Length: 98
Image (cartoon, rainbow, N blue to C red; front, top):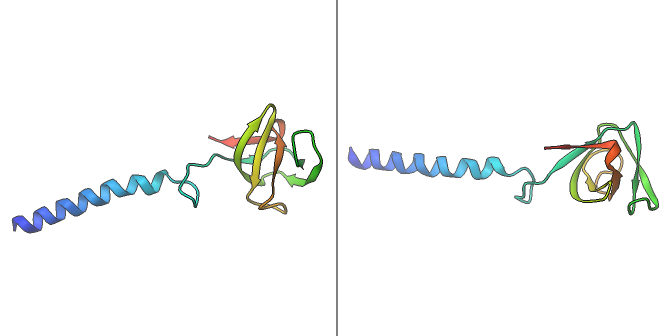
């Protein structure tokens, strides 16, 4: 009987310690990526801040935040017609999920 109780306690402890590790991860590579979404209707996605236009992103399109540069978000688009494209979006037309 003591062996069964000990085994159940061990399994409970292992389960309890492993759940937070999985819950904290928000991206497929195990990092806690900051994500965001486009708040403007039609927004230019640029190669560099104030640089060439790569395309446009639409209201509600989502992205992973790669960094910031002044008033610009460096992003990897994760939805919409430019999904998979890396570029810059003005912070005036995007919001972060924090």
